[in-house]
Length: 262
Image (cartoon, rainbow, N blue to C red; front, side, top):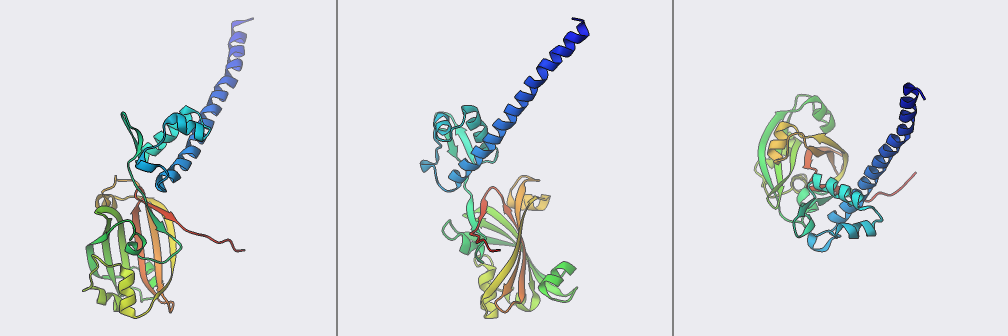
């Protein structure tokens, strides 16, 4: 057989092998992500008593996965900062995420009251000219003043969210002397207006932390944060609170109960 034919024949034999190896690696990576999702749920719901995960061989048997797949899944969780490997101990839970419901209109302190004490550091507060999108959503004239509030919110001392809030000035003026450090704005709005809050429109998306947000939240610059945009209305329908809330994604998890309707 001529040398060129032998080279061509050898390449033809090797191609399926390379493709098969790539397929195996992809499938193993897929299985690792699937297992990481299952383990993450267990981590966040207290499924591992004492905070220590079972041995890799036990996880492999329980989830019918290979040891390599288990190791890859644990590596993914370690990269998220949820677990760590301790010599002589094994894989342990090192971070906790707190649940934030999306099916009830509640302030942060109300939402997390079972998990500790929420405090607010008021970083900026005062009248500000409403940008056109803010004025439109709050139903105030373009260029009118609104109350602007920026707060860093902590749970048990740990930075959790950076909240930027816009409130119509006729309501917001009464907030200037209020205890915003220890009280949710929702409670204060209801006390000031004499009305219950009615409903809110929300949008949730992941964004990269800008330099300011990262510094305030003590998060790596460029880290993913959960951005919750919420426009809250009084019971009579008036919009009174437009918020842009950046949550540290490694400390909060969003959940809700949905009902199907067609």
